Picture 1 (cartoon, rainbow, N blue to C red):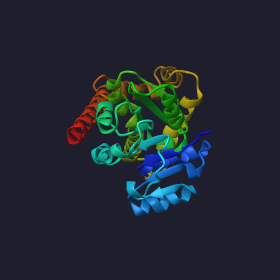
Picture 2 (picture 1 turned 120 degrees about the vertical axis):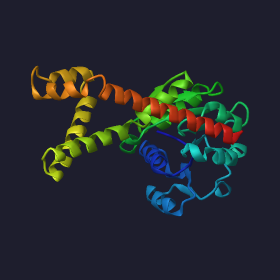
Picture 3 (picture 1 turned 90 degrees about the vertical axis):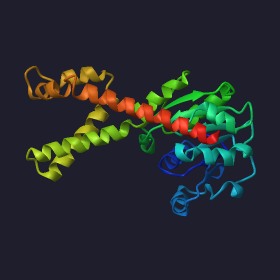
Picture 4 (picture 1 turned 90 degrees about the horizontal axis):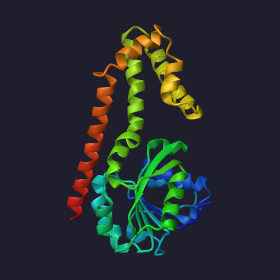
Length: 278
């Protein structure tokens, strides 16, 4: 069971997903403090129970938390770091989920020796099926890493890397990846409709097909290429479709280009945050 106190800065969709996961994992509501300036969002977060809600840093509990979790967008991270850096204890674990914002940028805002972990979760965390990748700074010891792991494990599977540069590709793959899957559903439905299937049926079939395939992949020990081969009869309809999709100039090229674009944008966001902080 998680214990606190935990201070969460940012009560948006990912912040709220983390909070729900922590509470479900046994964190007492009174051990969670959420800082969210938007009054509408604070009203929605009140449904989580007896968690402490604050609109700004000055309204927060004066007790130093075990972990300060920064669940904000990279574009506003410089302002958040300016506000929270001077307030944080050097013994508090700082956990950031902002895309692209480097450990060095975070370290510059906090006292020397502050343990810091960067994490990249994704939106399936909202249903406990998230995939998170973490990287720690040198000041983060075994206990700090264990706490960070526990916080993200409450919403899905957790992986660690040692090379921070890989976080840009992680962001491109798993961080942004759910949107690619949702877009696949849109494209399948649109194509089927254009070819003559009724719109409502096309949308329902596309959604059910992708969701079902994803659940089959999750539950099966087989590799995805094995599952693909099992449903692809030689000379059949699936083989005809895959011959188009798997052509080097089609899906393989498009997916590589998409991941490269997302990774580059992650680097740009990180550079902008570092420049603003500097």
